[in-house]
Image 1 (cartoon, rainbow, N blue to C red):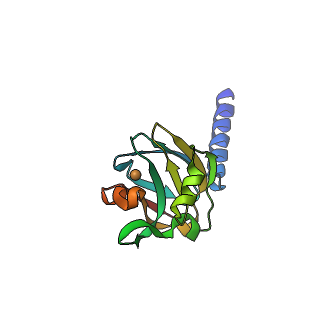
Image 2 (cartoon, rainbow, N blue to C red):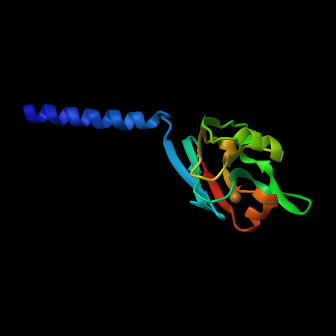
Amino acid sequence: MKRVTLFSILALTALLISACGGTAKPETVNLTVELSEYAFSPSQIELKVGQEVSMTVVNVGQLDHEIMFGRDVMMMDSRPSGFKMDMFESAHVEPMMVSEAMGEEDHAAEEGHDGFMVFLPPGDEQSTFTFTVSEDMVGEWEIGCFELDGVHYDAGMKGSLVVTP
Ligand SMILES: [Cu+2]
């Protein structure tokens, strides 16, 4: 009798767990991307629609760096200066800054970059932001740093971000 009861409880628990799996409880993903000369680590990021992403970007290098998300590189005076299409803007998703490195906002205004950008001075400065991956983000995107008139980007400071349904 006791054994039967225990089995019933286990069976019921399993049923409840599988039932809960059907409801849209967003999966939280914590990502850390390190910026250095001249690379992102990791340089390939994969995300899924519905995920709640908390991304921390850290400048572990010796120079100013930034990270942008988009596709189709925009040229200004024949230098890569950003993306024509910003991933967040085109998906109408506004990342929420949780913590910001010093000087970030001033720098964004100075550079006149279009789209979402996280700028980081050297010295292990870091920023964290969160966003929910939406349907409109599905596809292949690029991450890039366009510091020094695009010299960083040309030197290989780029990577890929793939969003799957
Ligand atoms: Cu850079």
